[in-house]
Image (cartoon, rainbow, N blue to C red; front, side, top):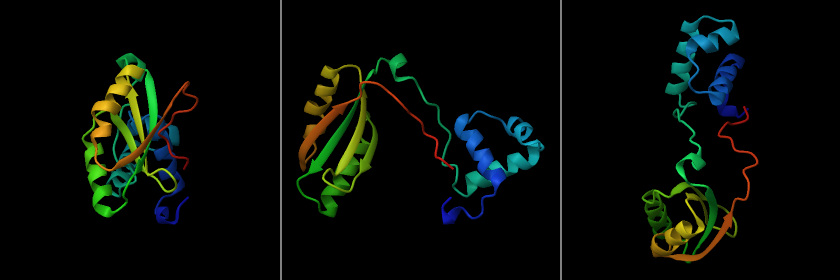
Length: 157
């Protein structure tokens, strides 16, 4: 556990683990698992939210049910690495709804993007008509997911 989590006790960590499994669990359900009453569990959850340990609650959708079976990881290398170009790229990526995730990397690749699309042709069109229009991209390299082996949003706490 990181040093900035010193205010978390084992009960807090257990609550967070339960919420990572299923964020719809009520304070009453969590309290029952912990042999506590709902009120202190509710107060702990509110404190964890206020302190920023819980950023937000989300629903994870099945991409195949939305006809988005193709997942690509696109590695982007920039031509120039000054602050202005990096900030412009980050801003432009935010506007591309096809990009599910974007990470600024250390190493040979500057950014890695995760994109879900309906088909390879759809992905090709995204690259051709949207991503390649962003100034200062030097090189793009795409890798495609053949099979999802492990997919979680839970942190190991």
